[in-house]
Image 1 (tube, protein in one colour):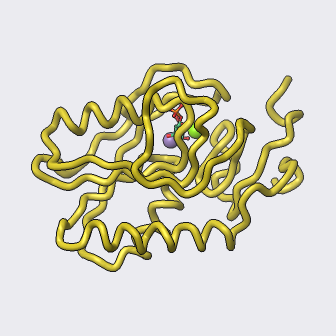
Image 2 (image 1 turned 135 degrees about the vertical axis):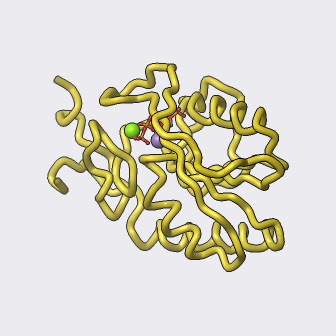
Length: 179
Ligand code: PRP
Ligand code: MN
Ligand code: MG
């Protein structure tokens, strides 16, 4: 698997430090708010798992699966709900946890949906932000790293469902996805 990676963009240690920093910030901002942290499956599962363990407050977790990419490197523009939330968001302080914001389509769709369900507040924390590819006006409330417009995988991010289990974030070799 590692032989498919051109370069390591963010090491395991760099990720851990940043996730801890975000967790501490969120601990301050969400104290006494009992936030509902929503993991956007599948990509956000490692980030969410690490992040909530750095949040030293009462919180609840829920999971939603949406997909816009399928096995392609290009977003289809159509967001599909694969699994909806178990909890009601009405009156809740919702924190949407994402691995990466690219075009912003996934989150625009999700935020509109959650606001329509009458959440008290809806904010976004993303580990990675790729502003070069944004086609929507979307800006995350909390963001870990800005990344360049390269095909990044690992720590939840996939290419054709693979590489999610890499402990670091790397750039995929072009020959792996260009046929
Ligand atoms: C990826 C990524 C984000 C989204 C970002 O998910 O995890 O959720 O795309 O792209 P966007 O800003 O252009 O919408 P994907 O649809 O590949 O599903 P996955 O999380 O299951 O890999
Ligand atoms: Mn995703
Ligand atoms: Mg994906």
